[in-house]
Image (cartoon, rainbow, N blue to C red; front, side, top):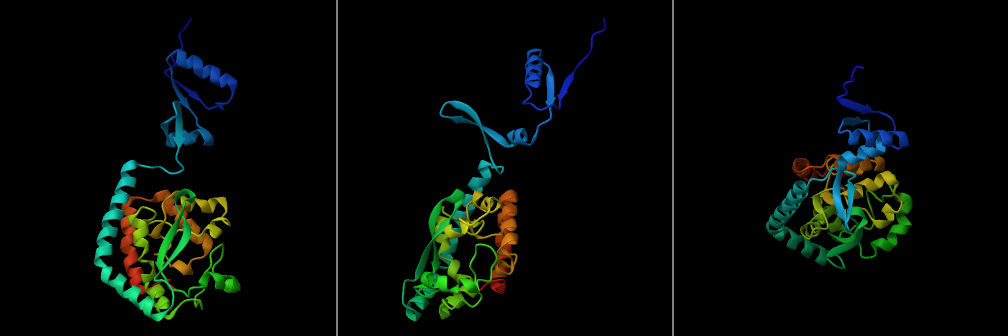
Length: 267
């Protein structure tokens, strides 16, 4: 009787089959090497990591790969650049604040609830560029919305003040968000934080943009901003979530500077 030599056993049948489970247990008992064809569900294990869940050994599947050093380096870059930036532009911040105060009634800053990482809400700050009752007037202007999807944009919004129009064209109204970055609610680079009302209208695929910390600038800002329709905007943000890295952030920041100076897509 000849002995069959088996170095490796390849299993292509579904792992849920009880007979396959019995074969795998037998092969393991015999100390054999096994190659298994993973189905779509099991394949997710390749991007998993072991965790201790209150004493229970489990695995966590990340919707996107996460490397601790990347998260840390991104945060360090945010803090260092934001801290230096706030000091450097402090005279500009003061000048803008004075211009807003002397040309219109109301506060200098405008705080609005936005949705951040994984659905966390926070108050995002801007220099006030609209009249004080802008939110109340919005309902009367919905028929003029120029953006597709759950986003409200008007090129010549009548609620914008004269100083506010200049701030928006130059993106100076966004500068107070550096404070949101400094305290960790936002990042320099990431999808723009949406309104809760907008998120409530999202399809599941649109929520992917909430899987990373929101930012001041991202692919959308350097690709035309208001000239890009809603679905394309969401695809850009999903692409960033999939490919984001420290080098990509640096590249986006570098490309944002000329876009701001050329006022591309701003309104």
